[in-house]
Image 1 (cartoon, rainbow, N blue to C red):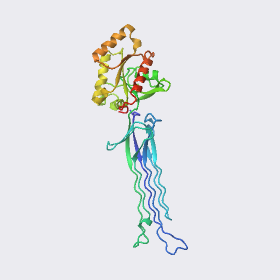
Image 2: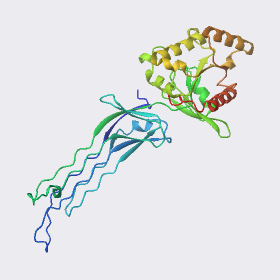
Image 3: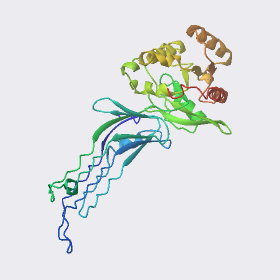
Image 4: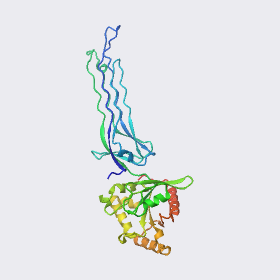
Length: 344
């Protein structure tokens, strides 16, 4: 199964143009000489970060990219035209790795940032360059050098203000579709979300934030079980995590306390620093819990977890409590706008 938050592409920079061997042949010039021009440089390949893109989905259909080669040199000391650079747009937050060595080439974190991933070939030299006092008619030239080839692995860490985390079927997709314009697939079976969905939550005039629906995790995710660790990576760049828990799970083995512990264990095994990030506890499916039982359930869970952060009870299905939660999130983000951990 292929996920759109990772992609592998092949890039080829343009070759340098060859130098030219040529001699002047003019009617009124008694002593002709070398006039072969240099070739042009090959175009380089760049990745360019763009806020207009949110996923790496486009790379499912195109995998090969090649910049233009430089033109060969010509007579009359005419230099070949350089090949145009090739710019490949990618989402902000894309990391580029050399697929063969695993080396991190660069991290594109700001809109418009450019990263050269393949150097164009250098131009060859024409025979004019080899003229000297002892070599009046050189017949040698230099070919252009080949452009760099590379296989790249692109990885997107979603740049969102708020990330939704929880077990499959906790209601993350339902919540993001309730509070934003995102329309992820929603169903009553695990792993309906196969790649992160981004939604813009508008709280008021000129007040909005980006929320990411992170695919559900299961036990063993940090070792690659289920959908693997690739989705744990998305948590590292969220300013705030909303830990969604099913308040009335169909499986008694996934009671709220155990559901929270499973996710915390996977987060710790992947990156212990994740648990130190701001995280709020959100019990979902309040519509299935009688009102008189909600507060006792909440108090018992907080006590069992020794939870010290904010706690909310909502129903993503009916919308109960969701707007109040979004208002609290907006206030938090506004008050922590200068947090240096924004980009992780």
